[in-house]
Image (tube, rainbow, N blue to C red):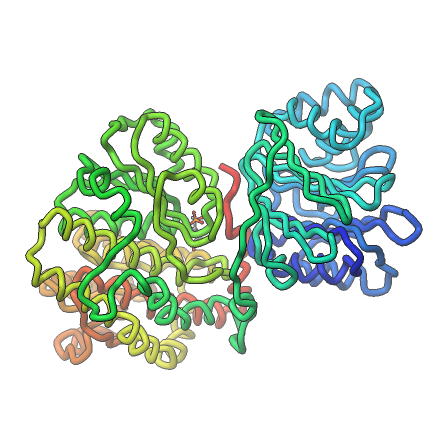
Length: 615
Ligand code: AGP
């Protein structure tokens, strides 16, 4: 939800912190702040409401200096977005500054206790409560910072990734995590970097340590990283090598990350399939399936848990797995699953899908599944995130960092992994004939080129977009594999253009939403050639008969629908089960261009955050 960056070393900290915050801005962007210990040992804090660029502006005429600092970009949970509520927050004496990502659930009780002892609070955040608590524990027990942090965190209920600066110890940075991500980068000169994910660190070092739940770490300039776990005591930090191309973190000439990420999809899917589908293009092998063949192919049932776009990918996965592997699949919102006492059998496979790998509800669903004895499988994009570390096995989608808040390439990456998984399991279980299996694998390898064709609709869609900017409501219709694509198309439009949109199974329209249709209501119909094609044509007729305005996504060469629809967007043909990978492209472009026409900040839509680490 919020982004954290820290640095301690010999370089100037401010440029490192600001650049890092910009990389993490996808996590939240309603206010930002930085705390630095300057060359005279003073602790200075600068904050601004708004984006990181507003913070930069506010610091432009100030002498921000020092080699130790922490910085934060916020997505408000407790307290409105304002400069007072922005992080870092300082302790009463001004000795400590703290940044926090997460929620302190028992902050009110702690706050009342501290207030009774005379602490005066300057913000309405749960975070300030934590920094005041740490200082109170330090002063009243005569403890050092590390000990005081450990004692304080034992009193805290909730989720946190925190970093603390102490002006009495300008060469030291202390951080801790529970249920919110935190990565430490080990620099070459004994300096340390800290961030919510590896993207702000990648350009300085490729050696990182992903902290685990309960870890409290001390970074002292020129010293080894020390990690103590609140439950398990002293730890030996596991250093990992990361490999993030810096180009992947920049816009590369596109006006927005979202457009760049839409156009990257053909290459992303090639990367996703590389090493998994053989060069002949007729066999797919996933190491997770090889290593856990019996558990996965022998599953009595698969339960997919996910949120948002990842949940839509799960709905496509259900159809793929059920039709190709004949294993029953249920798809659950992780947020509902975790609280409704679901029946989970020990021979179930619970599959968690998440781009970020840090979604709080999905992590809680994994925990529940593990406790029920199910085998837990993760499909994730962010390397080293919590979900891959908390699942028994899984598959990375390997589409590179996704920065735009609206998910695009991660969605098609997830669908590609689910397609490969379904094919692998079908081959293991012999539920489809060998020839069909080979043909399907071959067709999957052709999808990236077909996506390139689909991307050629960009100019047509850019021209069409202004027509839809007036709309207050839009309806997206699809059937079969394209029903989840309709849901996803509607979600994309809502997220970035703030136009209300609904996705519906086309045949369900007559059971309610048809009442909404009039000449003001754009209706986007996915009407590619598949077994339900004729039925979707009837649905188009029903919309037309009520004066609705139809934009149809059709298979190239379709003349029949051209006669019926106001606009048609032609797409390359493919197997029905892979159509979501093609049809998603024009729907992503449509949402993007409509939002741009409306002057919206496409990469950072209001009220949203990329990584939802609170429930
Ligand atoms: C997608 O455009 C959304 N921003 C959102 O629905 C997202 O898919 C959801 O929050 C789940 O995130 P995850 O994939 O990182 O778990």
